[in-house]
Length: 575
Image (cartoon, rainbow, N blue to C red):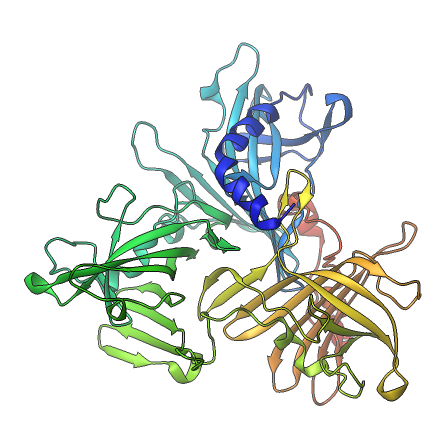
């Protein structure tokens, strides 16, 4: 099926499909006591289970397939796309004091692995009370529970319970330590993961408050934009999160193959105050990121319509990117990327707005062009194998030489469109969402595989891989997972193998590999820091991060394992 048609169909039917899916997913476990994987958060003990063959309940968490990977730094899995839960999980719920079975809940999960530390978040989507019980005894639908396992008995536990009858949500955050718990509510009580993201929170420091007909208008990149709802009223449309790890990170919006997950319209004004004139309107794709309670909103212009008092040249150019990161107390980082005309270069600016004046940061971030697609090949520039005739883009990881090829057979990487962005801080492209058991590769890439180097190099076959590309402050990370292999040589990578390179610049790269084991053997994981002065083996630090395997949500809730596992940051030095 054509990917664009498939996505368009999902967008059109996502709500109905989701409702049917959740209704079918409701099940009541027939266990009479908590299982080995049960854990307690707040007023409830949660016992995870899956529905196995024949409808039987099976103790434990369902593994979560990665959505986007940049191993060993960060891997995200689960979340919600187009209203469809990508990682549903069932729990039997017990009273932690009496042990009474209260019923069951269905949830949707987001799982993040940050340098091997696991964060799991689940949001309650439906509930089923036990016989003779009441829904009111179960967690409220919409409640968010999150646990970040920091290891050695340290965990951060976050909860967000929706308020009843219009009351405020209740947010708690607790740092669990071997020496006692620390209440962090005062730090994170403003991070409300049970509510949609608020794009307008990013622009409060840029308000243009003197236009009577446009109280929400703000100025960015030389334009005054006034957000409007679909009804024509004033304001931003709230954005449903795509992936969440509160209070650390929430990501919402995004776009895929031209399909926006969060569209936003704006009227465009010239002038200020009573002399302000409505000169037209624009439509944008919106990405919203909440980082520790600070909001970043990115706008990508997809359509511009001139009004009676304006012209096309007065409006933002289609493809332009406008981004604001609100740091609070009058501090904002404002980024713009404007497409060039007639083949000219894009224009990138970055300004730190402060109460004491603005600071131009173009020299720091002018090379980060969010108006252009991501370039996967930028991750491999320090690994090039330039002496193979006919393969100038080839590079070597481990003992394998990869030569990227385009769909038409020519040399090179296929550029990757941004999935979500918060430039200049972060852009993510590619990924592999799993929807109803089907994995959708958003950025496939072909490679020819060579043996040897120089004139003696021999092409032994080819592979196809799914790609994830991450741009972090202008530094590129590309991860690819082998999905298909053509050829019989034993030197070809195995299906499922993961290769990742993070280019720090100046000849310094982190290179990670995870190769599936054969006949039940353990996967082989390596991590090497490549430098101009020689390579440093970091496998002892990151050998426990297995990007071949699905993410394990239970690792976030396994306090016993966390306390028993020791982190030895000097292991790679042999100390």
